[in-house]
Image (cartoon, rainbow, N blue to C red; front, side, top):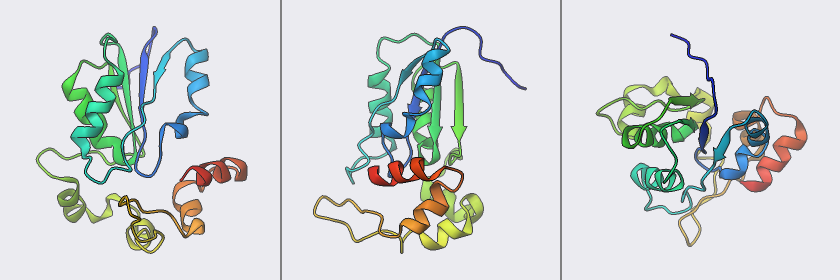
Length: 168
């Protein structure tokens, strides 16, 4: 069943791993020009102790006081966070954008083991080598930008890709 969005809504844009609210900067003006509100919270993905529940707490706090006319958009790894937000509060739609759609009863690790094809073989085999060792805060950084470009931004123009890589 296809549903069309009529009337105004608030879009809760939830970024995926290694990204931040900045990744929605090009989309936000289009939604606002169409008359929608946008909430794009910054998830604590630099905090190694934060889990999907902590991420959902941040999104729900950002939506506090907003009615049930919310469209939750989860990008990439934020599919799990988006599902939790939608389970915790009324939403109009739940959108998975290139997302890891969670399977009920499985952790992300269990789901990856059960469904190894849920990510491309290039990503599954290359992402660890493309990251540096964790720094003193436990954060890792990308060191192989050709991998990043091909994996995350293959369909983007060079200026958009360069801006995104600067944020990573």
